[in-house]
Image 1 (cartoon, rainbow, N blue to C red):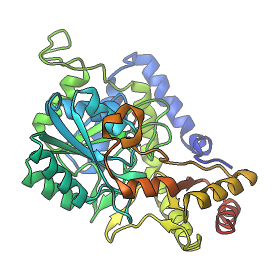
Image 2 (cartoon, protein in one colour; image 1 turned 90 degrees about the horizontal axis):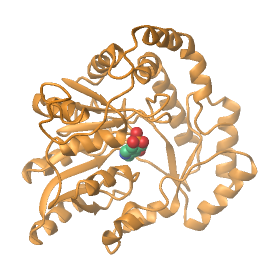
Image 3 (cartoon, helix red, strand yellow; image 1 turned 90 degrees about the vertical axis):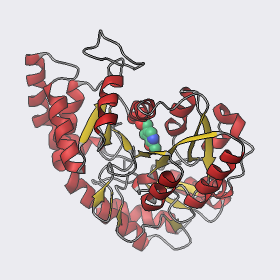
Length: 369
Ligand SMILES: *Cc1c(COP(=O)(O)O)cnc(C)c1O
């Protein structure tokens, strides 16, 4: 049994992908080739946004998003502590002061109330609030209506970290359209993944899109040898665009199956485990299926039982960001919900190619623990 199953998926797209690679070998434009621009157009159509700027990873998508609005030294950036390191790392890398917020018990996403409190506290301390990075944890979009209000009333730049939520939506509006700018990842195991590193930025702003395109290629002006601002090497490889173009053709079908699997788990896994709450009119991209055991000790027992039965599992994330060594200045922040949830959370196998027998077995082992 696999935790993610990229092999079965590969069988579906392999021939068409290889045909595309043949074409790339013929034209030889290995970086930012025509397939990259074809992909950007298809992705912006899919999301329903004006601009897609592809790039080298989800981390770089976040970094470029911050750089496009001059976030850096002396600025305070607010984000959730319950995420992958990349979310907060990029802000610190630019010299910003990262302020972590607590999360909601039901959705595991950033708590708007905690965010508002942290912004007020930062203002009192004469810090300079500049940006919010909201994360759509496990594929579920954060509370963007409230977050957009908070961002607007405090004049803050709102970035959607949708590395786990490509394909998700709120009231039929897709992720990639929330906040000022959105950043996603095409890491192989993300909902839409390539065969290496890749990422993309989405925005309706012509200004931000132009800046992102420039920063992606060393801050180029007229061309890459005319450098008008600081930038990075943040381009997407053409062969990765070929993978994504083919995966996009089966993406909705896979998403539908992942939705059904999530429904199956929600209905059949015992209520002693707390599930991620899907608010009305929200659709998750279901990057991971994560639930909470009753206690840290209970989680240990469940994981031992899964291991005994050779069922793979994951723990996202056991150590919250504010307790990571790299953010030791934040370690005195009291984020009780993040601390509690990260002590009890674990994830079970979740992909479009699980058999009925495998699903039943997983549910049985979890429920008996
Ligand atoms: C994966 C991930 C990233 C980083 O994406 P990479 O493509 O691995 O750089 C950022 N934020 C979150 C929430 C992620 O899950």
